[in-house]
Image 1 (cartoon, helix red, strand yellow):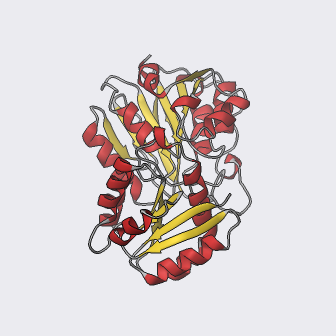
Image 2 (spheres, rainbow, N blue to C red):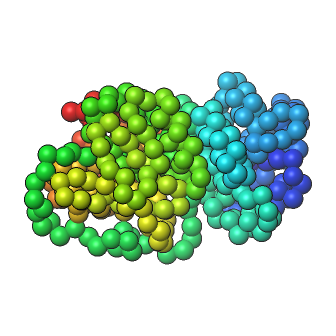
Image 3 (tube, rainbow, N blue to C red):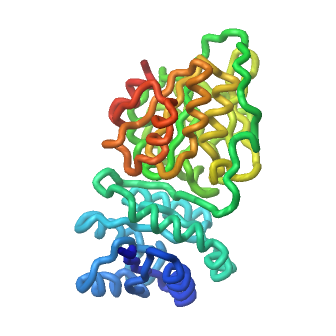
Length: 353
């Protein structure tokens, strides 16, 4: 059966282009379009979509208010298609907190061309949203996928050799997640004390969204949470989140660890890539690191977690019942990369342990 989609956007151009993209895709059917949430609600009384593609800033009712109403009455996968000004990033973060499944960042200028060029990204976002387990979801990130060749972490960093580095007492945690990860990370970081080991985190998310995401978690958490920059130390009581559109690597500096933020090609179809983070942890931290792979589509991070496991790092995968999408952890478990498989509510204790 086709995924039935409703498009809610006040731009006629956006409605037209999105309809063309989705209707041309196998397995997706545009059921209806609406100029604003008021019109959408009337139409949804007659037939309810499988996925809603929703703008944020619209007349009569904004997208976030509409999203909250949907989640309160009948939770349905929603893909946000929002402009990426700083204000837009903040608003879209609110949308994810309210229950959006995916976020597509559209520019203010050249929207038609952008949407046409991003047809695969849009299609994968809708298909990913349709697969989400709404009972486990409150806030979710985007899942950017592309049809170009899938590169491994070799494109950024050579594989670990297993050669031992001089010992240090520093302990660090590397976390990778995607769909469902914003909710999962909030559940973990808000429970951590300032005495917890330092964390380096990759959450699949577009450019400019990660700064707002980090700021929000910093306000909610006892520990410090910030968007990472090259040279930032991984310190106890601090979580560094990879910037959207950049890779983040853990590096050793004497007895301490810091991060390096670099550009480069997509790895495992993502930037930032969990595989890049985990490989760097295997190479430069080894047994001093804990690797955690959590909810998300695809397999980014599975090979990297296996590399961490093989050099003696402790490794954990989130269990299926607590995942929104059991893709990344499942692939890691299949590779034999995880020492433990535990639920989300046990992660904070595992990190402190």
